[in-house]
Length: 216
Image (cartoon, rainbow, N blue to C red; front, side, top):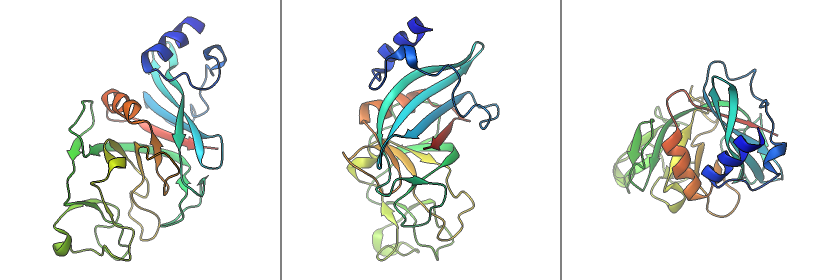
């Protein structure tokens, strides 16, 4: 086990926390992810920081292929109870639906959208397309931009990003635009952010059915 973890860390360049020999052999989320074979675990370690471990299920069981990856979370921490504008990272088990970014697709198994100045994430609680990606000229968008949580997606933090399946029912006010994305160097508005090089590695590894598990 020690040799396996050392090899995994060398591959992912992610041994940032405890010695690899102390890594858990059975991840905390095993009873909550069904038949998933790829899970990204995010566990809070500070008010606005977390530790990310990347797990893959094999014939031998769950194997960590990236451990101790530093992550930034919401400026108000993480919680099971969150809403639009709460600045909290949602806790729970969520799907990873597709990737996007200002940079071209680095490869991987999820659908990818390269975004530009006309790509938005609709955060208008009164819009029928709330909590979805939309493409429109700013002055032609059918949803609110000013005074809403709508985001333009052409920003450095979205060089590489993965959409988390939070509030997939699109309940107004229950939160929008939750992503795993490139860090800006500090807390987020509720997303999870990591180093861009690691984002690229993860995007190349992801396949349909992957999940992200978030907890304190």
